[in-house]
Image (cartoon, rainbow, N blue to C red; front, side, top):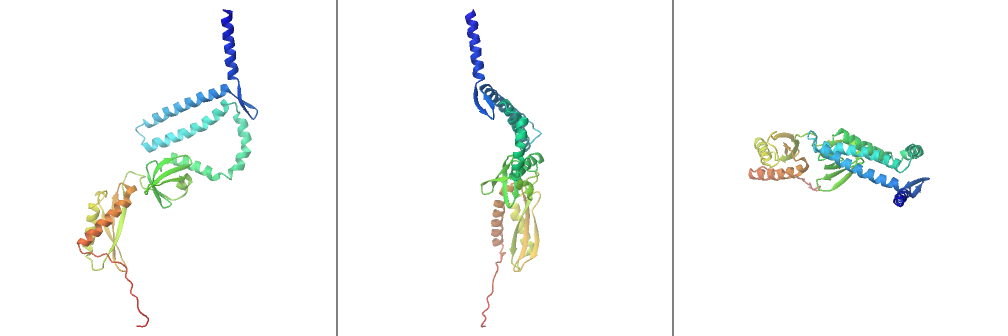
Length: 284
């Protein structure tokens, strides 16, 4: 019986010795095996908690997918900061000492990385403000694209020519930005054309409206309409206005509409003039 007790004591002492073993020493702070094991267990629990939170947020039907994404990303980043602080404490680092020691360093780096901080702050604003969401079609600095991902520092956009562009978040908050899908309503576009001065104005306006109504993707409600916009140097200028829901691919719709207009004009003997130059000979 005494031998069994001695073996148990020996095992307990061996385990305690293993857990107290110092793997590495950083700034006179020993990183022990027990601290590393605790940290691993802590991180696993945090990962499980994040999965549970994500599942819970995405189950809320009152939020659309973009809002669910924004809420989850905010929770994720807040938890990341908390996890980093707690992880340092688990490893034996004193947060008060770290903050005091890094204060001077942060002041020195402040000017050098102020743009980086601006990107992070802009990311928080975008996620909270919700005026730009995943799936939105936006236009900024002549770039039109669909928002694919919003991170704390950058936003990934897919352009119409299927290129992924990573934009710093400050570009979205500091520049004039058009959100073509901010609301669920369709957006209005136009196609302009000039015709010969001998053309029948009423017929031209009728054909333009018919062309827009026949074009797939163009909405019949609101109904397309035509304006006689100006008397040009060599043409009568018209614009047909129409609404579409697929804003991201609207350039395809506009191209197809121009082809349809060209064919309908040709069938009705309506001429689209082109600039002409008359060169005079100086000797004549």
